[in-house]
Image 1 (cartoon, one colour):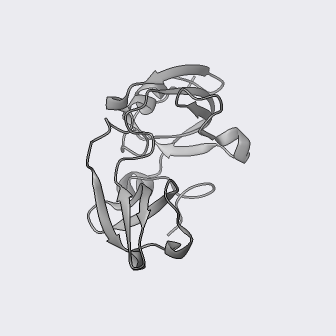
Image 2 (image 1 turned 90 degrees about the horizontal axis):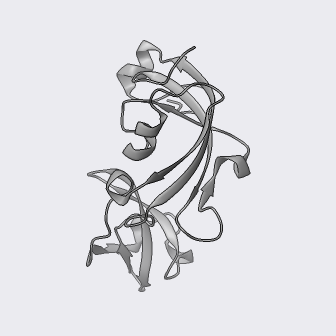
Length: 163
């Protein structure tokens, strides 16, 4: 039986809850599993660690503390960003989540705090920072990664990154 370890490509269904009544995300609701290359930091550490040693068909629950998830919330971790850096800048309202493209770290999920005529103030904490996350996971497939996937540090093909 194949077990999950570094350089395996793993597909799994999940739902995640942050303590609220409804899941904050669910692959089952979207109808397609998540596929990741293990050992490359493509998912949060607590979830990746919980996958290690598992096999196809395993279904389990795991609780992930902030330190193994999206980190602790940092006070005053906000920034004023010109509106032109947002694809949907004119439609954003306080409280909405959006993606900000940064030079340093690529894309980053942020929460809008204030919208001005030419700038937007955003909270740079991930929306799930500081929260303990409860995952319900079901492993659907495991395969060896290709040499190209290992070199690129992510999955290629169906349901994954395309160049």
